[in-house]
Image: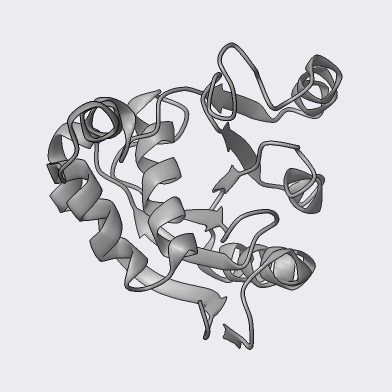
Length: 181
């Protein structure tokens, strides 16, 4: 499924397509990129185990956590596990670029994935982060949901690999993504 444009306007339809495909394939785990928690709301009460991956603290400004404590508590009460940690495809490579310029390996991987759209890059990244944190099972297909800014416009069926073996990641299906990005 291809959306005409990228962005948050596709969130509800992306979630619907992702949930439908999870049900068709018998997939129980979904990893959702969300800093506000609003995208995750579309996956509640659907019989799925939901992991929400946020930006790391300090992403927008030093010490700032973009997800308010009340939202964290609300989602946790609904059984959502929330992961806030360093981005798999940024971290220290981005620090080196910011300090010294140049391009580093993780950024090359990220740029390559962006050739399929920002959301595909996000899906690979958050699925790997959730696996590294032990929040999803190793070696199993999961649904990963990401976007091109706010909301969600991309969903994939993926078997993520741990970060130390990222090239073992298998994107099995692209459920939906924007055609223009």
